[in-house]
Length: 454
Image (tube, rainbow, N blue to C red; front, side, top):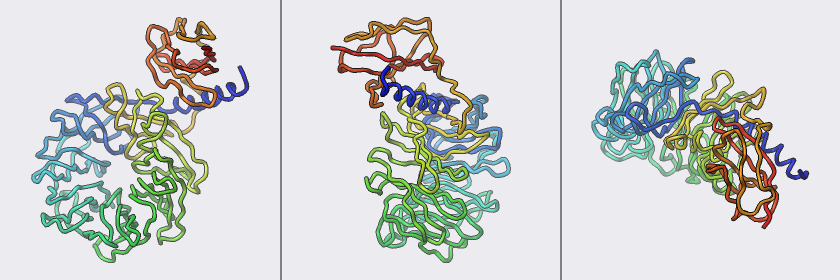
């Protein structure tokens, strides 16, 4: 094996060990008892993970579910039915054995609701019906009240606002709009999760400000003292998180390629830094997750097949690394979205599509490993003829289900293809030396060098 291919094999094995760090723990099927196409993140009480799907369930209008961290004991807690909400979105909030959340459709006015439900699936209650052209977003809590945003509207049927911030009690009482956005310099199209520190709320608007590209704002929880903290040059800010000194966030557009960026800025709006320019196909999506000095995030596009990536980057902008390419092993899921959570050195999250039914998955990603579990380069396999020009034949006592073919530049010539009849058609592949990657039914990996001659 030549030097370049030896390096490639080493890189591939390192990459495969990374793929082994991501495990699928559940497949959504779309049945009446499961749900499909999750949109949002997970939360946990330390034993169960809780989340929502935007479709599926008994009425195909979305679900609330719980599942243990090892993928067992999946329970459908609630199927939405339009009257009580439809198409849940975002992350749930857990307070005193109750889960709180929002839907973007359904309810009395068919523009979404706020709801609560016990963690055992009992005591579902609709707390509030939105009206007008509201599009409710994610909730947060400070332990005394719930706070949230609507991407549009003014909280009434008057259609005079471009988004608003609201608050209410846990029983649904005392709902009040504390700020209505008016566009222009004041921002519009409110995004992401609010962040509350003391009595001050911070948030982001996709549009507005002097540059028209969005703002970071703050406001007292009473609704007083609204002010702009920072006006962005990048466009379409997704969300923000904080380490107590900086806010970190991503944008849909902006950066040198116009395809999204990752930034940080201090609470007072100073020391703005562009940490990462994404490529033209990446599309950063969902909330970042901060673990120490490392940020973890996801893209909805990019990768080998455009199905998204999971990445990490240091908070100073160094050390960017793609951790998982969702298009390589799409049975584990594609299109990651929502928030990550951390339990016992695993990041947990959801994929909106992919999986065995192509309807989404729940996954966990191990941050550190002690070995490579999914690789076995000593599996007994023979590939012939080698060199070959039209067909490769696989002879092995092991059953292989899929394969990849990679050139010496590390480019995927054939990606994630089903192996039929133990034969591989190579008639359309040019002359050269390649790496053949074989995957067993139980996800073990074997590799060998092949030579194609025409």
